[in-house]
Amino acid sequence: MINSFSGRWSFLSNFYPCKIVHQGITYPSTEHYYVAMKVNDDQVINGQFYPKADVREMIAHISTPGQVKRFGRTLKLRKDWDNVKFEVMEWCLREKFKDEKLKEMLLQTGDEELIEGNYWHDVVWGVCTCQKCGNKGENNLGKLLMKIRSEIKGEQNKRPSLENILFPKDFLK
Image: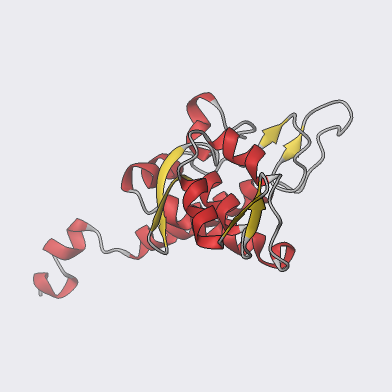
């Protein structure tokens, strides 16, 4: 079991650097993309009006995923957010793991259960390990990562082996 997306397993975290391109904007992490997709309306930030596209571009340029997460808490969420947030996360994780290096790293987790253990009370995307929460949580991030890993393995199993390419069964007849 991998129960923390830190250290050796930090690449599983939404804070890990990766390139997500959507609607002409390049986001430097899945956290950046996820927070940007929370915005579907124009926003008022510090008393100033910003169109949706400008807010998303602004989010893409925030220095760190932690700052993005904090900024996201101040935004007016799109009305359908609760209905689309899981699809948004799945899409951006699929984009993240199109990168061959990251894909290989994900595959190297083998068949381990992936649990986004945390202490900041995120019981939707992970499992909170604090005394108050008592190891409770839905672990949706871990479940999505395992689903994508399984699909990648399935795709690899469909590829013909080098032996089958070089020596097809009817070759020896």
